[in-house]
Every structure is written in structure tokens, then in C-alpha cells.
Length: 188
Image (cartoon, rainbow, N blue to C red; front, side, top):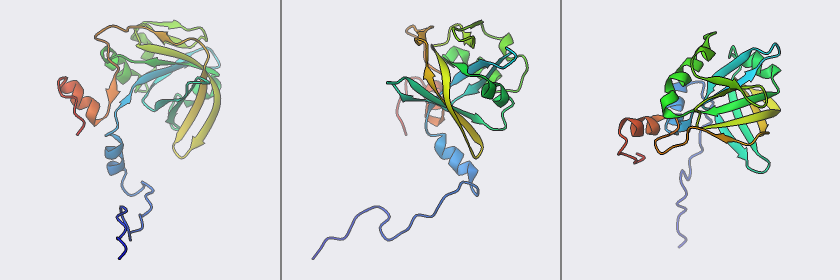
């Protein structure tokens, strides 16, 4: 006699999930994945500084040095980033959480807080960020509600603010739990 297949879901076809009927469960599930927080900055066509809080940032490749990040197509910052060829990714430390919150708003005065200086590409760079990557956009795609940019890191990454107590800002159910209970590092 032949053993029965023990593959998961045998005999059941998965139902397609388009997310339209249940965004809250999808958001909750994705919130289980802790992600870092950055402020991405640029100068628009008129040279005005623009920036926003981004947690949809990731490495694509070390060789060549490529990164990827996304923003909503409804973002008021989108025109600035579409016009800019260069931008800076400022990786935030825990003590910069207030800046992350500030740059997540539509405020016209975002750059009034923090110490900013022009990077090598002209994009604003945050003093005290854990790391800064200055990049040149290689491609941009829009899909559904998101515009994504892939870019090449064109300057040597700067590590700032690194000392024994510096930790990155992280969001997600696990990251929040660990921040609230620093001794508890279990993933549940």
C-alpha cells in the first residue's frame, strides 16, 4: 500500500487573495515583520529640500550596490522624488523616532528639526543618523498604489552615530514588543 501524501493543504485549492476584502488582516499579518525606518531626502527641480519617512527600504544587491524603496502614489512628496535623480537614505537611530514621526506628516517644516547638511549629491543628510546612503536612481516603476525606485549607491556609505547604545528604529509587532521589554527577545 502506498503512503498518502502529507503535503500541506492536499486536496484543497488555495483561494486567491486580492486584499480588497480584508485590508486589516493583511496589515496585521505584514505588521508581524519588523522593518527598519529611514528618512529619504532629495532636492526637487527648484533645489527645495524634500523628504519623507520610509519603511519600505531594502537592499537589492551588494555587487553592484543597489537599493529599493517605495512610496504611495498619493504622497505629496512624489513629484519632488520623480524630478530628483539623486537622494539620500538616512537610517534612523532609536533616539530619532520623533523625526520619523515628523517626516511621516505633510508638514512644510519637516527640516526645521534635526541637523541637516547637503550630502555629496546635494540631498539633505541627517547628522547622527546610523548610516547614510547617497544614491542615484536607476529605475522607477508604479504599480497599484505604490511607486518604487531602485538606485545605485554612488558614495561610500557613512556610518554615523554608531556606538554601543545605538539601535535602529524598527516598527512592527515584534520590534515594538522588544523595545517595550528590552530583555525579551523572543519572537512569538
